[in-house]
Image 1 (cartoon, rainbow, N blue to C red):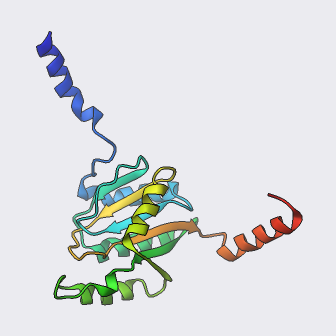
Image 2: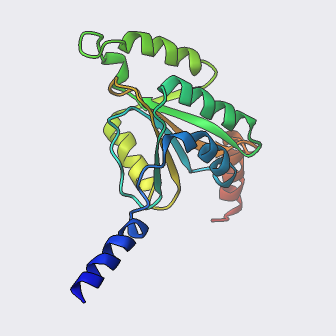
Length: 185
C-alpha cells in the first residue's frame, strides 16, 4: 500500500509543480506574442538579468530566454509597438549609472546600448528595491511576465509597465478633473 502511494506521489509530482517554474527558452517569443493581447494597463513585462530572483507572487510568470537582454528588449518593444491597445512605460534601476566597468565589465557599453534602444522612450529611474516592491505588489493583482536573459551586469534590468495606448495620461487627468469638479467620486 505504501509502495503504491509513493509511486502515485512520484507520478503526480510534476502535475503539482508551482506555476512559477520557468518555461523552456525556445518558447519565449511565442509566449510574449500569445500573452500580449491578454495584457493591458497595469500589467508588467520585465526583461531582467540572469540573477533576477524567481518571485512567488501568484501573478508573476517567469521565462528563461537564454538570450541577450538587448535582443529580448528589442523584440518586446517591437511587439508592444505593434499592439493597438498598450504602450510601454519604462523603468530602470537608479543604480545602473553608478556601476563601474571595474566591478562589472561591459557596464559602460551596456549603458550606451540601452540608451540607444530606449532613446524614443522616457525612462523613470527608481532604486532597485522600490521597483521590486512595486512588482511584487502588482503581482498580487495583475499579471507580470518576467523574461530572464543571460545578462551578467547588475542593475541592468528593464521594467515595462504597460499603459493604455488609446487613452493618454493627459486624457485621464482631464477626466479626473471633470469628475472632481462635478462632485463624482
